[in-house]
Length: 268
Ligand code: NDP
Image (cartoon, rainbow, N blue to C red; front, side, top):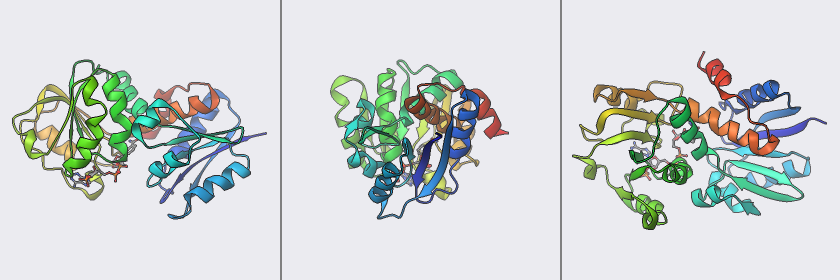
């Protein structure tokens, strides 16, 4: 019997997840199907309940349901609990297990694909929404020294509060970034969706800095700004997307796919 999986979002038709998971399944010879399901904005829970009844083995969750998915789970991994958001569900023995693979995806892309170790590096994480929540735990565990900047400072302060006693992590406004420099700057805001740039000061990038935009599929104002400001390495979020999918696939199938050919195919 073919095991069924899907990505649930609204909207979801643009999602590359079906393509990625089908490629993983072919490569690892796993007998699965993977579709895209648009849940009504007020019908996420009912959609999940239907999938469980229909015998699905799990699903990915995307915008805007990651926080709702977190509330729905019977069990959570540590990284999902830290993120308070879930992008991967496993349906097993009548239980819903929740994980968040976004942070592992970002870390694998930065450390393995882009060759940047984060230990003792100064990282600026812009944003305090679902994506930023999903990755901060993993950046923290990689030993980075983290500054979170957000328009709504209160949200950023709440996000860093639980990490602050254990390491170098702080929150600030964009204005307070003036005069500071970072080895890695990650844009986890949705500013690129509206072709805008967070209000960044000049001189933000340390020598040999990496600028990373979680958005993919187009040239973003942030990456254009970063190139003008002397960042030496620029990356979009396609690698993160493929790596977080690989981590979800591994959770479900206990087989780790090779991400490089899939990423190369998507880039082509
Ligand atoms: P949310 O809506 O949860 O959060 C949006 C965040 O962006 C908030 O912190 C908000 O600040 C900030 N923001 C929005 N517009 C601006 C602006 N013009 N200037 C400065 N800050 C701004 O979105 P998500 O966190 O879910 O997603 C963020 C981005 O990450 C999206 O582009 C998404 O596509 C991408 N993403 C990519 C993934 C990948 O695998 N590559 C995975 C997950 C997300 P405030 O709180 O002040 O309003």
